[in-house]
Length: 81
Length: 275
Image 1 (cartoon, rainbow over the protein chains, first blue to last red):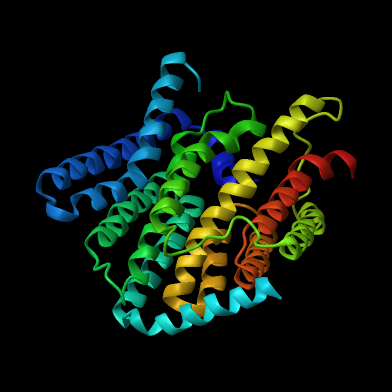
Image 2 (cartoon, each protein chain N blue to C red):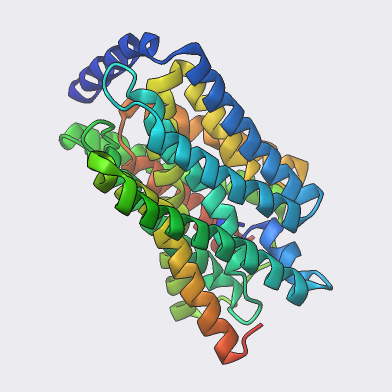
């Protein structure tokens, strides 16, 4: 009953099509990560004098999504459900 | 009292800066906040996938609005909100992306909570010079006040238990697991949620929108509990208002971190075992 493990997550885990749904949601998160990483590189190349500040700001979303990506890879390689 | 005097000064300065945020800027913040609540409603009542699409789009749009918004004074308070708001969308994306049945329920808050805490610390470092979050009380009297605030979490947790009546997650003989679960709730429910919703979202909203910040941050806080019973959603909205008012008054997070941790530990671990 916390925000990160509340009723929404419990219902999601108990869904009949959890496996397929989980794969699609992971896909959305990974697409977001790829888009942000691509933007980060664009900013690095074309960002001008404010590039550094913008890169640091993009890391607010890139860092946790990268951690989530690593977690998903480990979970899937271990065969956890 | 020193902590109150400091608070008044900070609030007066924030109020004076409110005029610097333009009407379209305030409308944009309101739109993004409403969109986050709508995305949470979508996840809870329509389907996880469409809700996550909206959350992902919001993270991209709001972050890019922040990247390209003018950050020079006097209009600097708007972009700070735009850096804090995506944390709520990230919370939901991470909690569903990292949901795994094989991980015991008592440890699940740590799984999505850890990367969310990383993101919150990034935002904290970016905002720290201009938006003092106030983790540590300034003097001995403030420590005492914060300790009293923390104790409020015990009766609030009892009230939450009376509404939710959750089943026990652990047996009373499993002391090591109980202590580990309490530590998880302290860090990833108390610290992380208060840092995100009060320390970053409410504090930046306060500078940009004024008194609306407390109810708006509370609505955002309650929205992440959509899917629970109506009584529990109202309970969390009320809790958000109480914690938000404490934070607005004292500008120190320590007490409400303790209160939130005691609420969660009582509601999830202790009261289901002893009552």
